[in-house]
Length: 439
Image 1 (tube, helix red, strand yellow):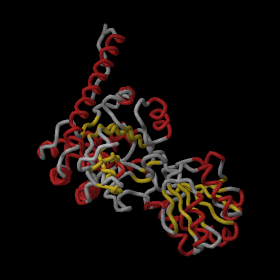
Image 2: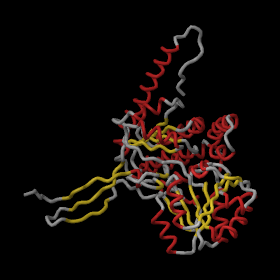
Image 3: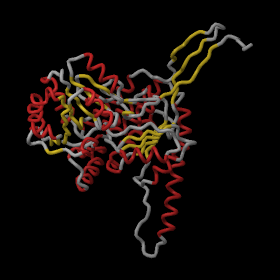
Image 4: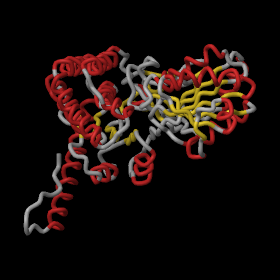
């Protein structure tokens, strides 16, 4: 980790800072140069070669589990000292089971079809030319994230398989875990003959490193930020490189007037409780007034039994007296904790307007037995993932059959929703002729 300064009597701190900043910028520029050089080689690697490297990554993750767990313990200790919530600590925690899941995710990515070189939309023109699209790597991906440590291996594996080089910059809360994981991945790909610089991690928590990354448009082709609003806002504002945002998950479950209420209770409990500290956990529950008095007592009892704090509108509090009154801010909040905002609404249109106004355009679910109502919800909701009669927790690259994801894009251009292998490629035209010239 880069050290900005140390306490030495008589030191010229301005000079130390200036030299340190120069060193930091030089380090980031060198990483960019290595990534650019590596990307040209990775783009032409055969699928079998990439899959061999991915298997090496999976194998070494399992072998080095004790080392990774030991480094993760340092992050967990710091999280406890800093007063992080139990849900946030759970996001950070790695054990043998979770590291094995990381390795399995890498193996699942290896088993997926390679998108690079895939031909699409081939057609023949009247002059005999055959033309269409071929999938090609984007180049160098800059990935800045405040997330679980397993994202480090997911992102590295997805970028390698899709023919891209990647520069990773994780959050300070997981620095020891991310450094340990990236060291394992670097050893694995080196053994497999992957070009040096294909997978790199910024070895410092200095925020200025992010600024240098955002200015490297000659080296980085795409920035993918994944984290809280302040991170996304900063990168969107300051980046000189195209950005695909992966914003927070203020996700909503709407229990419609035509809902199967016996189905609705376990769905909202799973969406909120199964893992509350992740972006696809439900943060808001909307209930149609025609079913609220029947549904809310049963749902609230189960949720509170599992430790969920309910914050409700005035109508909710009348039905569930143990719920706390909600504020306007609650409807906007991604809690990442065992807290759920609850609101009773009178019409389907009111539910749609509420979600599109307060939500973060991540994932929303409707519980309804009406096909007409479900399709109307699908069309009207402006979010990257829309679920019908199932938990928001399924909004995940692995659950969608994509092996893993680098994140869930809440943007509308290029990629929306979970970004897997295909979303980390672009298309270029290819034209096949046999001597044609234009008259």
